[in-house]
Length: 513
Ligand SMILES: *[C@@H]1O[C@H](CO)[C@@H](O)[C@H](O)[C@H]1NC(C)=O
Ligand SMILES: *[C@@H]1O[C@H](CO)[C@@H](O)[C@H](O)[C@H]1NC(C)=O
Ligand SMILES: *[C@@H]1O[C@H](CO)[C@@H](O)[C@H](O)[C@H]1NC(C)=O
Ligand SMILES: *[C@@H]1O[C@H](CO)[C@@H](O)[C@H](O)[C@H]1NC(C)=O
Ligand SMILES: *[C@@H]1O[C@H](CO)[C@@H](O)[C@H](O)[C@H]1NC(C)=O
Ligand SMILES: *[C@@H]1O[C@H](CO)[C@@H](O)[C@H](O)[C@H]1NC(C)=O
Ligand SMILES: *[C@@H]1O[C@H](CO)[C@@H](O)[C@H](O)[C@H]1NC(C)=O
Ligand SMILES: *[C@@H]1O[C@H](CO)[C@@H](O)[C@H](O)[C@H]1NC(C)=O
Image 1 (tube, rainbow, N blue to C red):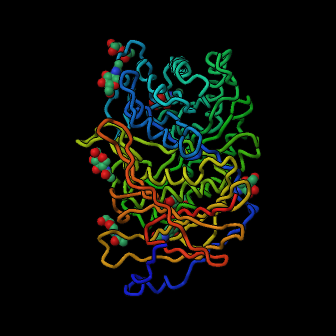
Image 2 (image 1 turned 90 degrees about the vertical axis):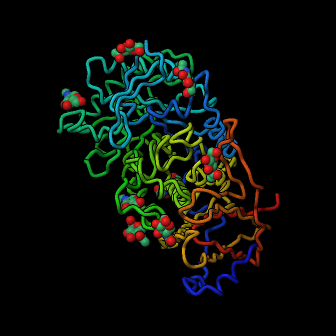
Image 3 (image 1 turned 135 degrees about the vertical axis):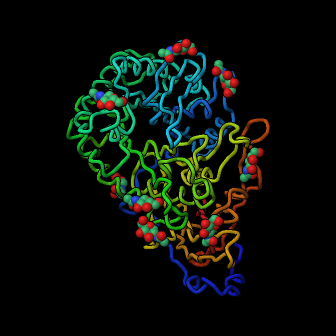
């Protein structure tokens, strides 16, 4: 174990608090209230229509960089990450059979979303770029032209012909809670939505799914709701009350969650590197989960489109930096601990929080960006073990976060995040927090892997367990660095570990076979 003590003794600022160890203790056997077994595709993706061709490519030019990234998650967890294709641009999309280009976009809204989108047959070749991937595909609902349903059916048919047995669900419309006063009259409510949604679901079941040769359930194959804004009166409970599942189409319920927009008050430390804010962003879904469970315990609840910023643009300096990879670690792990069954992290070529830029953009080559590291760490926390559960360790701290991870009911990992914001330019030495972990008696050794970066605002020199990833000139995902797992010293039933400010650590507890 590396010792940080000399640094602590000489630095005058912020060391007083460090003298007290933070104790991390969680039972050896999985406690009551721990999560359900975690889905191995928990840390998944969502792609908006207008950037789908960038991320996926087409038949003649498949995007192999994206394919490699998606496969990295498969290697780490044994499950192909799920990709949901949808969003506001998808809700506006018109299919044009005689269009030779993949996608044609009209002028953009201020948050970068095009107002009109037309796709041709080539667009759908993108689905072939990710073999084995489970998909959710969204059709339009916002569109209220006379041929809107026909357009939705056509797109669903073509998408199905590419996705085949890997189709997990169709979605109908996007964020209908934002329809009133925009694409629907201002008194549009959940009952109106349920009526329209059911009409589309019935039609897709009958005209697209019925008799499909892929073994897909032709009826219960829809992901419902996709509401985004909490205070607008569209609730999960109301949607069920109004009969969203009366016809039995609902397989999953998805809500969309963004931590913030690009408001002037958004900061790393106060907003993203803040466990209290992260927990609050997710516990607000408990009533939605309860309403879903009460309606039908077989319906899974997930966040099918989520990330840090609903405006997407203009906040690279807080969202595309190392501090945001720590946000993502805690956001995903906390969501897992609440039994949210999947997070589909939305990506866009020019989004401030994107995990990777798939094509040359703005004079720069494609690249891996810091947030991807948070998602990779979480994939490693899940790993290949078939029965993984997680329990938060409640520290009562906004600046620290900790979890116990269980395999077949036995404590097997600890995760800690130190959110104290520190930059390479900060004028005092990097502080460190010492943790004292309780180690169950069957554990004979322990290893730590760190998610490190030069500081919260860094965009380079980030590594996870010694490894860094980036685009390579042959268009693939490259990996460099040497894998680095530190052997930790167990003393009695304890081990001590220093975690510098702005770092996350995963400890593997090793038992004799
Ligand atoms: C998650 O599900 C498990 C198993 O059903 C349950 O014991 C636990 O209380 C749930 N967690 C939350 C936060 O509801
Ligand atoms: C469909 O695409 C063709 C070929 O680009 C174009 O000529 C035609 O105007 C398009 N139709 C519509 C309705 O946009
Ligand atoms: C496929 O993608 C490449 C690279 O983006 C593009 O140049 C080409 O025009 C696309 N092919 C079709 C048929 O759209
Ligand atoms: C149809 O959409 C337009 C704008 O897209 C909207 O103003 C109008 O209220 C909608 N009509 C109905 C009946 O939903
Ligand atoms: C952390 O987030 C909570 C909830 O949003 C907020 O009340 C608190 O002020 C934040 N802490 C800091 C240091 O900004
Ligand atoms: C979600 O997080 C943001 C900061 O990222 C915070 O301002 C907001 O209050 C949180 N929302 C809830 C409901 O806790
Ligand atoms: C880190 O750097 C960013 C950007 O320069 C700055 O906004 C922030 O205040 C710095 N934080 C600390 C703790 O120095
Ligand atoms: C990743 O590669 C791209 C393209 O070569 C480069 O612009 C970027 O700086 C690299 N990122 C890091 C963190 O090294």
